[in-house]
Length: 331
View 1: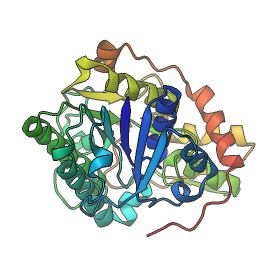
View 2: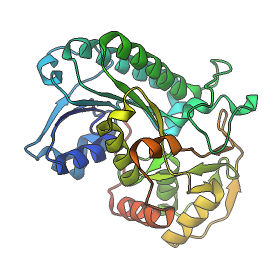
View 3: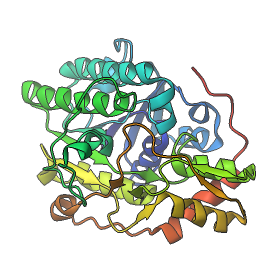
């Protein structure tokens, strides 16, 4: 199988690439190395030494030129390239929205002639962020829950709107180019090498610094976390299951919903840290609960998550405790 992964140096992308390499597939990775760890870390460099892996450094915010031959004949294309990380939604919202939309437009323009057999688009549970105030957010959340962005001003919507626009673009491209497309909405995937702009690695880094008091935003909010190994297995099943063509599916773990304050306490226990938790209120646009219904995914592929927080959190903590100090963020 010939596989192309945009965002191949990123969190899900690199884990997914390793899974395909284990299947003896040919893997082409595209990435602009926006995140520092994608450029420098040993795990990614080791991945690139495999004879079945090819890497092209490119910026999808610019039209793809000179890559036509590399794109042609792909059995599956995973479009994962995006600026992600909750902190970044608030810090650089324009860059988040612009990058994510342009990356999708330019990839689809390039694929018009490449004729891939399958397209998997990586979306997000953030598309539901606007429906809770309207009383439309069911928990667990299934794929029939409507998407609504009440107004364009909330900075957190920079990510969710850009990913939903990508869903629209991929759906229309699929019809026009006759390329089967599946939209995967990931729900709070975590694990080793996910960067430092998400809640779990952010907490770990701050606990390494022994912050006290320990500030927590949205401590009473809940999230259902899905370990990266489960997310990758689910994604592989989606990509290799004909019944998933044209479908919209949730990937997540509905069994691991936890309050953010309790998450902080569990990480403190794992790391031998003791600090006063100080609640700082919810961030603008953040939902009070997030937990996916994955019954459609299970019905189509047979997937069931296997890694609990009890197992996944220690693995994640151990990786970050071994990792070097983060390099300065690239802008």
